[in-house]
Image (cartoon, rainbow, N blue to C red; front, side, top):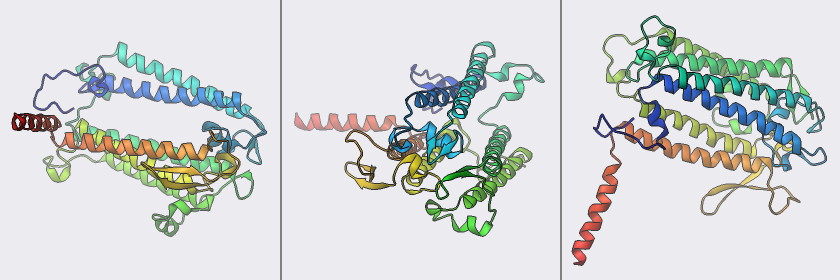
Length: 353
């Protein structure tokens, strides 16, 4: 993290990222615990939504988020956009709760039992294998490669689920099996108009291509190492903790904004019977998506409305975080701003005297 030239800097308790600075063991503990929290939320909130789900009301008007996504995967015996067999959703929720406990235990294990810095373990030990250093490009590209492969496997699972089990098709009004359309020309052309995709086969084809692309990239990063001197042309200076954090925030922010616009208007991936009617983009103090559905209560919104708006604003703040950490990674001292403001105030006071 940026220390502004002070190698012995101490951070306040709320500076969470500082707790894992140069401490690979704590970094892994934080990752495992964070994943456990997400799993716990998904499982518990699905059970909460099941407890208040009303089959007599359209799903998109009940303020739901987990159940529409499960219904889109064809889980829950969907008929006419209504969950008729909640057992499948319950199983998914309970599995998430179980996995959250496993991940949480892993977080506690790495936090309490293992050393904060795995580099302190002797060479050849199992714990030592998971140590890393922000200044070691080979190690970081090795870790990046594994992340890309995991993402590729996730895409394969989605494609195979649609092909073997099936997903909800709003146009057909049923859950059906979808074969992927691996048409490279189609994928290339949808780079600029992907928000208007109307074919589930094209959606699966895009994920199939993405799976290949991610796994190939992961294999490349695992197999390759830096040759010769680690120069600026090979990314030197771009692998600090601040820099990697800024790249991650930029990617998450971009995906959040894309998801917001896609959810607001696309009815193939976000069917109206599951998420509510399409939205309209409006401007007041800031841009927002508003409901176009009729007969909505004054204090209620469709699932599509709050899902799109939450993604839009989270994406905005993620991008601000990216800019903050990117500037810090380049050495910009934000304390100069407060010092400049103080100087201006002193000049004004002097001028007034």
